[in-house]
Length: 278
Image 1 (cartoon, rainbow, N blue to C red):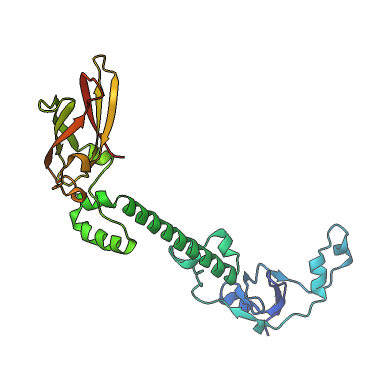
Image 2 (image 1 turned 30 degrees about the vertical axis):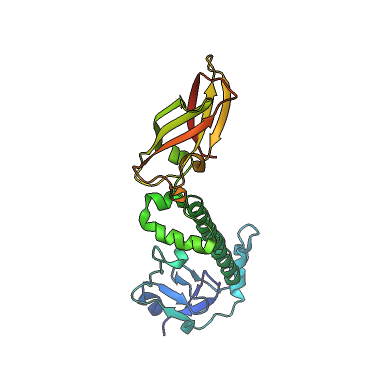
């Protein structure tokens, strides 16, 4: 019968009976049947013999060794032979859910993670709604410019305005002022009526889309170029009864105006004519 030896599992400190044949089977490598730790049975061999007096010097006593003398060794069947092919540890591939977890998520419970996901989704939904609202507000504010520069979008904008109770108008403001020009103007006294002045001018739209009729500011000045009188003319005052004011001045179009000004109470030597949008 083979001599019995003893080895101790480094994982759980369980002592097993082993035989030289068992240790030689895998080069001494065995697996603890209690905690599944794989260890070298030869390197962790222990003796259950009670320590002698010479071994019990207070500086040399091993408390664990003293405990082994009182331990009940388990049978050799408690040790399992290690497999032929070592089991490789499973490594999560890049992109797996475990690899993408943050430090906080790795140590949080499933309900906490679910609650965090709900908060993130709710925040993303709110941000998306805010972006849509900002875009809608910008489209509403610049609807006239969008309809003029991208005519293919005009039907959709008109349909939206029918619901929102708004209108699509010709471009106005600073954008329109960049496209409008007073190409010619003149102010003369009416020879047939004393104190009556005749203002003539040509307004030209240099853009390829319609722009709103501007207001005109007529300023009469004296010989020192000081203001004598200033008058604002609305589109209805100078465009004439046949003009389609809501449609504006068509793209690359022009209008010629003629306005009679009563200046019988003033004396003027010059004038200035400007355009503006209120």
